[in-house]
Every structure is written in C-alpha cells, then in structure tokens.
Image (cartoon, rainbow, N blue to C red; front, side, top):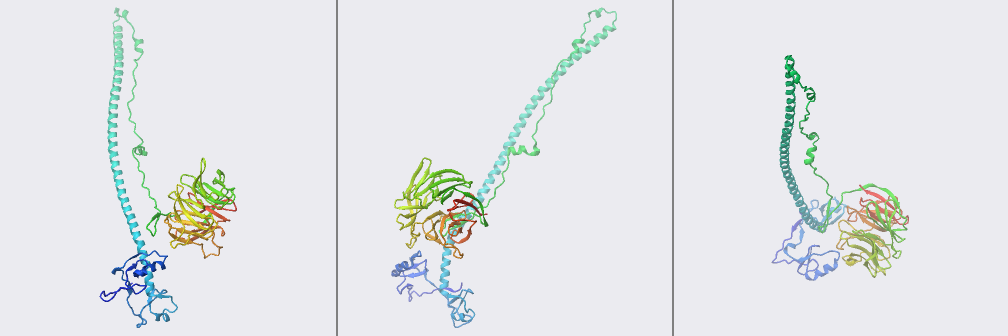
Length: 559
C-alpha cells in the first residue's frame, strides 16, 4: 500500500545472497518467500516440515521487496519501522511513548510479509474461483441459449400443430358437408315420395267427388246401377315416412374443453438451486440451503427392546436398522415394531453397522477380525482384516466401505477403504508422520461429508479428526472449550446436506454441531440421556440412539 518498492540491484557490483547464509542464491521458496542457496535448501525443508514447500530456481522476478524508508510525521528524525495493530497504521518506535502508548505494535516488515503471504494464498484460491465461476457463467449462458432454443422449437411445434389442426378441421368440415348433402338429398327424395303418394290419393278423392256429383245430377241415368263406392279405400290415408332435418352438434367452446383436448400449456417451473462451495483444491460440491432451527424439537421417542444401542442407520424416514449388546441386528419401523431380525454374535464389543447401496447390512466382527454382509441366504464374509479389529463402518458415495480399525494388540489405529472386499487405500499418519488417531480399545465412528472430507470420531483422543479425500489432514475438533462441560467424548457421527458435522457427546448428553471446517455452531440437547449413536433420515431428522435407555429420540433441528 505505498510502502513497498522493488529493490534495485546493480548486477555489476551486487550479488543476491541466501537468506540463511552468505552464499549466492540458487533457489527460491514460493511458499515462504525465502531465497536459498544449494546447501540451505534441504535445511529449509527439514526445519519446516509442516509446510508444503514449492521451491523453484531463482530468477530476477524473485527479487525480494523491501520497504521504502518513510519518516514519521510526529517524529521526523525517526523511520516508520513498526505497525500499530490498534490503529492499523505504520509508526516509529517513539510513537509507542506518545499517541500509540500501550497499543499493540509489530515489526512493519514482518506484518507486510505475513499479509503478503495471506494475499498469495488468497490469490491461489481466487484463481480456482475464477475457473469455477467461469464454468458456471458458461453453463448459465448455455442454459439461456438452450432455453431460447427450446422455446423456439415449442413455438414452431405450435404453429405446425395449428396447420395440422386447420387441415384436420377443413377436412372434417368438408367431410361433414358431403355427408350433410347426401342426407338432404335422401331426405328430400323421401319427402317428395310422400307428397306424390298423398297427391295421388288426393286426386282420386277429387275424381270420386266429381263422379258422385255427376251421378246425382243425372237422375234418370242407369249409371247409378254400376256405382262402386271408393270411400272405404280412401278412408285409409297412405303411410309415409317422417323425416327430421339433420342438425350439427357443436362442442361447448365456452369452457374451452375442445382447445384443451387439442393442446395445453404447462407453465415454466422456477426453483432455487442450492449453494455450492469451492474448496482450496478447486473441488466443487453442492450444499443445502436448509438452516438450523432456533430451538431443536423432540418429535418422538421410540423404544427399541435392544440392549445398549451401539449402531444405528436410517434406511428411510420410517425405517431404521439398529445393533446392540444383545448382538442382534434389527430393522424397526417408526413405532418400534421389529420388521427383520438377525443374530450377529461377534464378541460383545463396541461396533457399528452400515447399509450398502444395494440394501445389504454390513457389521464388524471382533473375534473373527472381519466384516460380514447380511444377505437373504445368510451372512457373507465381505472383508478379511486378519490382525486388525474393525470398529466404525460406512459406505461412501463411491460405494467403498470405509472402516475404522485398530490392530489386535492395540498398538496402531487407521482408516481403510475397501472395494469389493479389497483394501485399496488407508490413512494412518499426517504429513509429518504423526499418527492421526489414538491407540486404545475404545470405539471410533466414521462418516463422509458432502464436500468429500472423511470425518472420524475418536473417543480416546477426545476429538473429531477430519481429512481430505486424499487423506491429507484438515482439522481436529476437540469440543467447545468455552463451555463449562465435562471433557468431550465423541461417539456416533454424521453429516447433513449443508456439510455440517453432527457428533454425539456422551458424557455431556448432547450432540455437537459444527460447520464443515470444524467451527462450533451449537449444541442439541432435547432431553438426551446417555446418547451414543446417531443417524439422519431422508427428511434430515436426527435419530439419536441412547445406550443405557434402549431408545431412539427423533429430533427436528433444520428449518
């Protein structure tokens, strides 16, 4: 911010030296911004093992920046060589006895170096953001184009439909016109035949009238002797056909039913997409927008008839699998009724169960040092872990079985990933070679977070350990130290759609909720007593299994 100026170097007289000795510089550490000679390169790596060093050949671009000497306004003879953290301004050493007395001050060069490192780290992430945002913008632009193309096609289809229906209607009208003409022709012919038939009878009546009048007029005529009456014959009027004119039947267009039968319009659908998060490695994952309720509520309490619950897995919003010290795996409905039950004797140890994508329950077996799958025909050995005891289990999003495991002499602990029964990855140490997990007989539980992190609750370590999918250590959550609770003893663990981490704290009768980075958010109590394991159902209600009470408490904690 005005205090940095590129260091000038006269190449004919000056030589850039190593920051750790007086030798000529050969390398540059981009992570620490340090000039290094050939001998000091290895020393720098060995001394700072917690940092991933990016060491490159030194060039003129790596000339370190120094601070332009500026005089203090209050003490003109003094240089500004300190930075006041209370006022956020550069000061000189004499300012600490004046306007900045009792203020926190640090070395100006050091604070600029720290800030520069922060800017560098942020820049790396911003490059990731730029790429991801660019992808999103392109996706949105493609969506606009796709939307317009779709609507253009719909308009074209509507016009084609109009033309088709016009043609259909014209053909229908023409057909009905022809039918109507044929009907009229036939009906008129019938009516004409009726008229002619009646006209014939009418003419006979008139003829008979004339004849009878003539006979009566000619009184002396002998024709009267030949008279034959036609009255009875003419009394019967000839039969005829009655015809009603054809009538067109029109649909009730006032209700627009005919239009709906031809075509209708489904309105566009608008919905909110969930937020996404971009990790430091550039990975992108969807997150839910559901927020924590102000006061979590206990929905129901379910008695399980299972002795000391040690494992729980929600299959849906009304079915759950449980495991306890009675060593029976049960499937229960929401009322607590048993739907299925299997004997799974494994040595009466603390252990876990997991549900695979194809609906098979997996459980750990202490004595046989293996993991079994429960199938229709019985148990099938899925993983043989000779020498290791399995504890917490979970199938991840890739279908791999993640297993917390301790060596059978309790001298080592690790997490293994198994595919089709074969170990393909394991995590045991951090980048410095230090063990990630405690060494003990106590239980461990495991889950996968929505951002790909692996979260392990380690009872003996009194902590939750989070790792990246690659196994790189992320953070360790050791409880909320600000509260006057007993020591944090984590057991069952799960994550929700917002990548929040939920972990049981047995000794404090609660569930801790943290964000994806291990920052404490809240406690969930709801009258919990001796909670041990937990799971989330399809509606993200929290099911907490209480060990000694043999019951499950269902809690609503999200809006």
